[in-house]
Length: 258
Image (cartoon, rainbow, N blue to C red; front, top):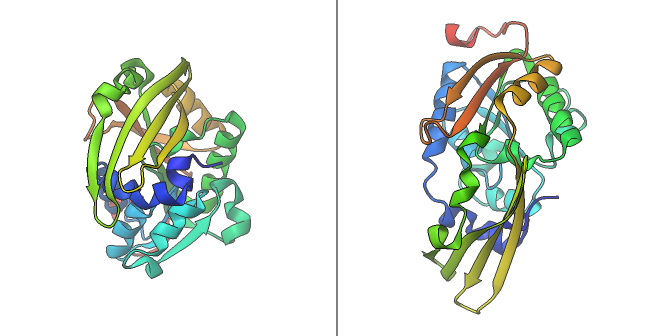
């Protein structure tokens, strides 16, 4: 089940205006170029921001997300016809898109951490592996638990008012609800000035240790090529680069993708 901030139609419609700075995606765009990726699977594509950035660069993209409302928003955007959208999750990919074979699979932003159930996490890694060509890469980020990011999740530090065209003023803030490591739960609150409606969305993230993630990847057959720093949040996150063993045979790939 997707959280309400992604699944509720009114909240999905304002997701992008509330988070307009997606500079975090620049690193993923550079990696797609580095690997010579021409087919990409965007797991947890949400409202389609990253998928559409790739499509604008001529990449063949499949975007998949369990939140129908978010996928509906993605489908309304300019250029959306160039992306194949699926409402679902990576565990159903082989059946949904067989035979899907991509050069790169991604989980940007919080996607890896919102998969809190251990069994679903394992099946997601398996689904991504099966969708990759031999030599293809899986790239995702996850916060370093040692940095205790949740200590910043307070109303005082997150409160803001956003003017959204066609919607009006929206107040929003985050409030930490529970820390029971490796799980952290928080609540996002939204107040619509136009009609006074108050909506909330509770989310839980799983904070995995670096060694745990590496062990999970290896267990599913991946080779962990690198663990990088997030350029936009240095020292706060792990960016995992894992590869399905084998080699690309497509002639267009650059040496960096081999």
